Image 1: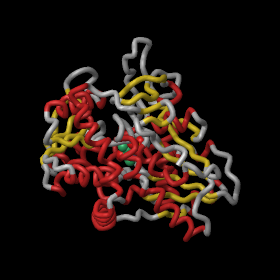
Image 2: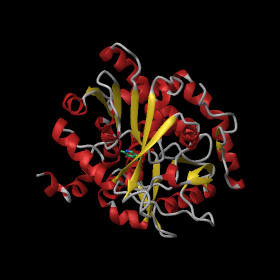
Image 3: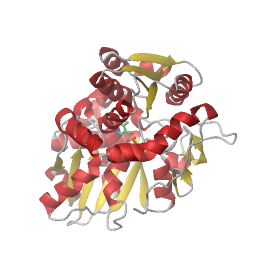
Length: 395
Ligand SMILES: *Cc1c(COP(=O)(O)O)cnc(C)c1O
């Protein structure tokens, strides 16, 4: 594969593992062992069995007939919204909990912003019978109460990060501090294709089941194992990495990444990292991030909590800078409109994150015989209150 990570964890000039000395041993242990473990027959067997019987995979590839008619082309939806816990995030946490078990770890930690990754982690920790601590910004704990309740019901301890802006980056700092203090028994489950090597590659491999299934489903439904185009939203980039994975080397497949424009990329309230970002280190990897002249992180903004992240994974920084992927942005109002459009045309309420991917449709010049797949990363139940604030416009 052209876009494979190198032995030091770099995709081109992006990636690596910029970690404190105290974490060196933990991270080296992962770097040295992850490929061998993940690729072993026993691991693959347990992973795929859980994906089938617990997560409910394969997720359907659904031909969206009315949406296709509207855009005069062929649009398929990869239904990650139908997974257990409601999004693609469970694919990754299932993989990492099996790895933690294999490494003999007994305690799980995670960071979460909106709480989606926290819930997916608390879920698999319960499944594996392991202690689980989830770090979450104090502000996010207030804003995302239902997910905090879910994590507690699942038996996890939710710890508030009270420093800085009291959001995701502060929760990440707390999780890393915890990891440093518990190097022997604790496994850190990171929720996207971010963090020090080997996390970006590992998470991309776990999520790659999305595109692996797509090849078979497309072959069966359209007679060709690849589409003309794939559209996915990008927060850290894990659902996009999974949806692109098996098509990265196939230049016939156009890859479109949709970032959250927030109130507009020039408004000062945006999460369009690849457009507004510059090179720097965040969460221990070198990538593109939103920072000021002094290297201080600029708080991102998006109506969708899952896209509200100040960096992007190093794989995406590389795919974008090398021209392999094309970036579009969707502002808050465009995402809301796209969420209503899918709901009214197909009877599917998408997560606000996924609605950003759908909001790219009006911006693309489709040919009638082309096949486009939109990765529907999650379901919209968690976003109903936000959608309903705009109901008047759609009555
Ligand atoms: C977390 C989340 C995202 C954003 O994360 P990625 O790592 O970029 O995929 C997108 N969609 C949903 C439904 C999410 O929960």
